Amino acid sequence: MEGLFLFLLVPMALIGFHLIWMILGEPWVARSPFRIAVVGLLICALGLFFQTQLHHAEGIPEWLGRKYPVFSVNHDFIDVFKKFVDVVVYAAGGGVIASALFTRTQFCFQREQREQVKIRSDVSREISELEWDLRFLEADALINRVGNVQERRDAILRILGRCEDKLERANRILKVMGE
Image 1 (tube, rainbow, N blue to C red):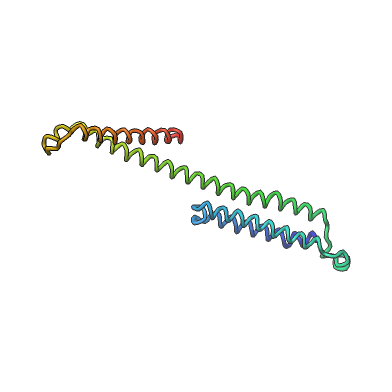
Image 2 (image 1 turned 90 degrees about the vertical axis):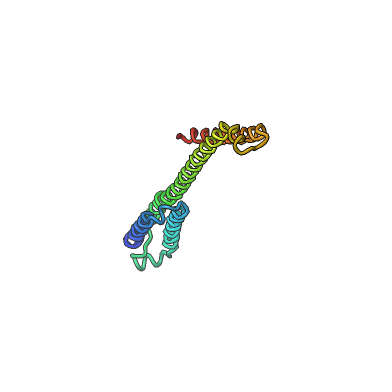
């Protein structure tokens, strides 16, 4: 039976791993953590398939093994192959799933970093515009004949305070992110 196992299951395992390696090398898979996790689940499904085949081999009646030696089962070999499936196949599947989760985390981290940089840039531009408006508020009021300069100054100062808070928050988040 060992010869039959080696002849059937080992090439199937090698072909399966080669197929999975090729799938993971495809750019459309590598860009999506969900697709990477699906490949990890496929690896685990491959392990379940191999274990099912091993259980079928254990269920072969002894009289068939005596009559046809090709179907004889060596339980020590089956136990070693089960351990191989448990350790290698499930560990590989779990490792691919963990890699997908790590990749997803990296994508989220980079997206958040880009958003904070954009917020910082937009708020800095808005602050400079508000400071410009505040600097020339009285001259603008004289030219355009706008009344109550103090109310307008208070409104600009309130908006400026909120913008500075946003800028401080974005800078704090970016500092924690390492930028």
